[in-house]
Image (cartoon, rainbow, N blue to C red; front, side):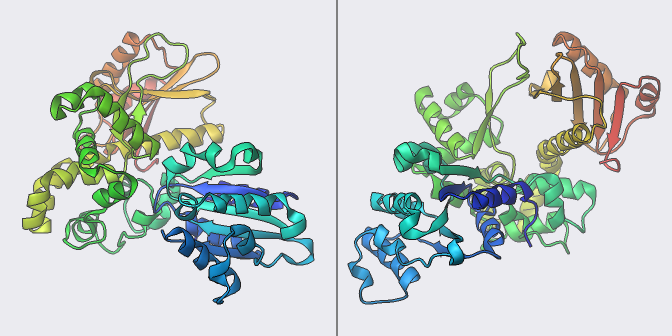
Amino acid sequence: MLVGRNSELEQLNNAFAQPASSILLLYGRTGIGKTSLIQEFIKDKDAFYYSCLPSAKDEARFFLANAVYGESELNPYMDRYEDVFQGIKRAENNGKKIVVIDEFTNISRGDKDFMEGVLTMVKHPEDFGRVLFVLISSSISYVEGNHSKMFGSDSSLVEELKLGALNFAESMHFLANYSMEDCIRLYGLTGGIPEYLIRINRKVSVEENIVRHILTKGAKLNQEGHNFVLEELRESASYNTILGCLSRGMLKINDIFNYTGFGRDKISVYLKNVIERDIVEKVYSYDISGKENIKKGCYRVTPGFINFWYRYLYSHATELEIMDPQEYFNTFIKDSLDEFCEEAFIQVCTDYLHLLETHHAMQFQSVTRGRIYEKESRIDVILEDEEGKNVIALCDFTEAPMSDEVLSHLTNVCHEERMKPVMTYLFSRNGFSDALRSKAETDLTIHLVDLKDL
């Protein structure tokens, strides 16, 4: 069953409903659910689907010809993709055919004739019939970096759909048996990536899932972080070092330079490459437009499993090899897991505020949002409306109830940042002190939200 993806299915169906032939470029990282989405889309339509592995130029064309015509002694003699595509049966009654080539870059990287054949088919419906050509790829950097090279002056024929991770509400479909706390932990661990979510065994605890599916030698996810980077990037040793630095809190170029000795220009190139692949993101504190106190950005591994792997497994490869998985969890992960998952909690709380806005339950409509990352002046969510008014939020995933001291500190931070929020939301995993509840009862601009409310 496909979970979520309603807006993506709508975009696909809208593209299909257009009278003219066109190309839709569907892309996103490995395991994000591209094939599941396309299978749901084509299940009641006239479609041709082909998935291709990396092959030599002539063999790739030969394999596709076999899929189109069936195995034939003539297939090896087809030297143009245009001839191969001629064999795809037209839709009946002048309908529209869907042609899906999954992981098309395995062909197009080595043979420019492939894309020429695709464009010929799309531009000449009188010869091929009306068609929606869906090209799927897991190579984000290749798709985004080679668009003009692939399509040139025919870019107007191409629509793009980049598939991202599932949000928390969608991820909950995979986490039905867990408490709200554990759902947040598992969301933090998986980052909303379907490939990781489906591996969760809902009959056992979060801890047991980590021990069985990540820490145990030979488990599918045991080397996933390294394998994912290896698939995406050359010079994996250097990238491993960069990602290891980021996952351990070295978030600025100067921090990485001091640790690695890599040249700053070299570090910048490495960071650019991992950002293009959605492995790393650059974040800015207080990115609210028109303010003078915008701070310089820093880098972090995109929240989710890759960050978990580099933080907890990469730096302790020897111990992972020789220790019992449960002992490894107790030694290196157990005490800091909730601190690691706090970023997921912040995202859940941000989604909550977005829902309040969407359903007009907040009486506030933001036009932009930001955040202050620095620990001493941290604000987890800053919303700003057209008039420059702010709603702010702080999110606490620790064991202790949130105290009124947190509110006092937040008030001081707002003064320093020259903000006067019209509403303050405080989110806490373990509730609030009596003193803080008393303040919220007398100040209606303060809203306390616990896990039950979420």
